[in-house]
Amino acid sequence: MTTETTAKPLPQRRDCHQTLVFKSAIFSRILLLSLSIFWRVLLSPYDTSAPLNPACLGDPNPHPRPPPLFPSLGSAIENGIVWDGVYFVRIAQCGYEYEQSYAFLPLLPACIFILSQTVFAPLVPVFGHRAVVGLSGYFVSNGAFVLAAIYFYKLSVIILKDPVVALRASILFCFNPASIFYSSIYSESLYALFSVGGLYHLISGANSIAIIWLALSGCARSNGVLNAGYFCFQTMHQAYDAIFLKMRKFLALRILIAGALHCICIFAPFIAFQVYGYYNICQGHSPDELSPWCKARIPLLYNYIQSHYWGVGFLRYFQVKQLPNFLLASPILSLALCSIIYYVNSRPKIVFSLGFQASVEEKSSSVLFFPLEADQRLKGPFSEQSSSVRQENHNLRQRKQMGQGRDPAQHRVDHEPLEKAGYLCAFVLPFIVHLGLMEATAFLVMHVQVATRFLSASPPLYWFASYVMVSPGMSQRWGYMIWAYSAAYILLGSLLFSNFYPFT
Image (cartoon, rainbow, N blue to C red; front, top):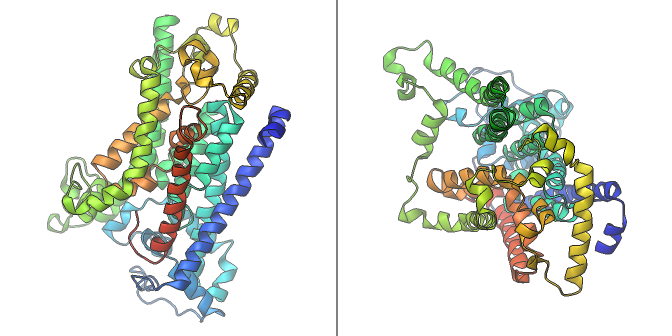
């Protein structure tokens, strides 16, 4: 496959890879849905309350609906609404009725509501209303994942500048250990689509589109607001360039103001949702009836819900009885930690200088994050196409060396600038910082077992794993272990999660 692939022109090769990623994403979703149905038919669910559907609080006496034509199929769909999916479907049906329901952000319920009222509305007499709402949720999650996988490949090609490695990383993403959540009524797929897609648009230079997409990621999951950090990183380097290299302080001020506005735009949807919750819960009630968070100096509904209803907090999960959950999360935490340590050990100057000591060549190929002076850009422009072609020639020589039994790792990063275009390039630094913050949060603050799906949309995990799997300095067993880990969690997740047993 490698010989045929390298013989094709670069654009044609990318199109072939993108088609393969698209097919892999669809196949992985069909596989997960099939496994879920298989386990659900084979075993009895632990919790049988999934089909319960009491009347909405805002409409206690709804008009009775006629029975569906195929109640058994409708019941089968409703049985697949489990765990957080129960909340998302309920919100799509009835809105935010209870305080704890505000822990689930509105993007997924809004998409479900729109689809169930439009595209899938004709199916209500066939399967029943709640079944159609659940079917809409499955469609949104699985469709969003397929699009997320395509954007993941596009982003990986720009960052890694090696379509073969980008393809391998994208296939790993299609079969990631948290796959069951990307095929269920969960917000992971929408978050992955808008975060990865937003980063692709950011790196492609479409800042306005990137802001919208990253803001929408904050409407899907609360950790979407951390994506503002990419704009902070970009602003920091652009402001430094304006002050110390171009000596233009007013330009630096404009850059700082623009960066702050970009970050505010990404935070705005999440903040607006908190204001919406405050208005619904706290306004119009006497002080004795108010929830404690309503009286706080800064009333943050989301933090209160996570702490009060789910016991989330700093080191609150560090208990002996939670040891099995730490073991369940240990593979993804270990992979994330290894990817960070490997990058830090390989590029300490880049990491500890926050990218300011990156070489001119690296900055020119990552100009959106690391701006250069105008005269430097004129002397050494590196467009995406030219740098990708140069990197392709380097990758081809590297694969030939591997085929001849030579070890390309002998050429150290500091002496071979083109090798910096891969996982160890300065372009990856903001992704590494973001992953480090996410891992620290998952380990120290959250329910640690959630780390498997919480970190599953982080690109560096798959970029690092794709390099480890073929690195001459690594044993092949690491590649087998990564695939075995993914396969085991796909099987285990589809078995436990679909039958309402606790998974992650």
